[in-house]
Image (cartoon, rainbow, N blue to C red; front, side, top):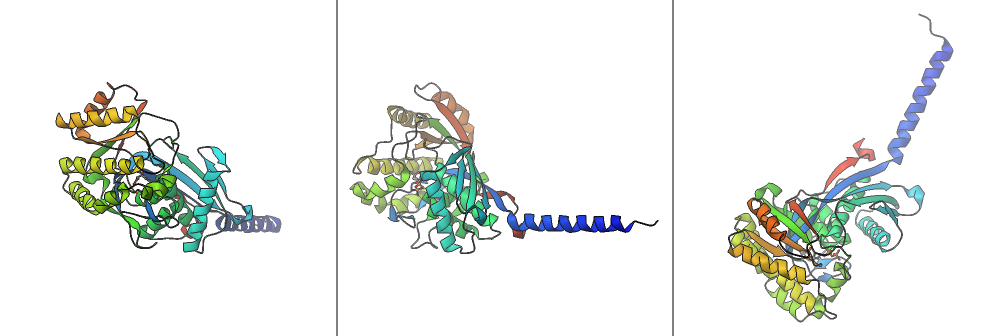
Length: 359
Ligand code: DP6
């Protein structure tokens, strides 16, 4: 069959146009979406030796929280000439955008190939500022999305050090499951690594929300005041030993030793907070009531203990078989606004990426 020359030319033109459009899409689209979980510290990070680099006063140990996550899409686009941030569907211009822009600048200091400007769209599936560390999951997801969108592959250790620059606890949301953050000596040696997988020990965090208002003094400001407490040196004196005890308890799935050291470490951190100048009181009457009950329940035979971050909400850590019992008992107490349950979660991961290299 004879084909008219005009049809052939038309077909070729269409092919050429598609090729150009494809090419443009590949070079223009440097986009990735990453997800990272919140984490709860069993041995706490409180105080920095170097605030700029977020080199902490002590090493810490935590568990990632399954089901509580931040999902962040980052699109590198130099044509924009400005960074932009949409957080939980709200465009941001103030402090939140500044902190994200600063982090992207810090990333660029260590990874010079990164482009200049980005659009960041981030969503948490849990409320912010109520004692569930949103900065941890946010900066872990942001770091992984930023690096991946640029088509760069970095080892987990490097990603953890980079996430630390945005928020110290974010370093612990990069590796999976139960995680130790080594305080280190400098940027490269301060990173987190997994101690055990999420499946290793079926621990559950029953988060008791007693306040849903945003905390008045955030962690970053709190870290700055840690050294003003006479008790910070005392807290630090035996923190390595507590971390060792806690890690062994996790490795041996020894709940009795675990509960003892986790509560001791949380109480020590809050003693420092309360004796800082000016003092930081995060506990509310309802927080104390839950802590006291948890101790009574443990004497009754339930495998449960408490820990609190920089907020009034209480994280009741228990073994899976006792979860329903713990929740039923919590429901008999007054002043509890909400109860959230999270098991051990994975590390940060890429949900989607259209970077040049992954095409
Ligand atoms: C009490 O990591 O939130 O939750 O580095 O300033 O972002 P920045 O602080 P952040 O501090 C967490 C403090 C804590 C204890 C912990 O998670 O180890």
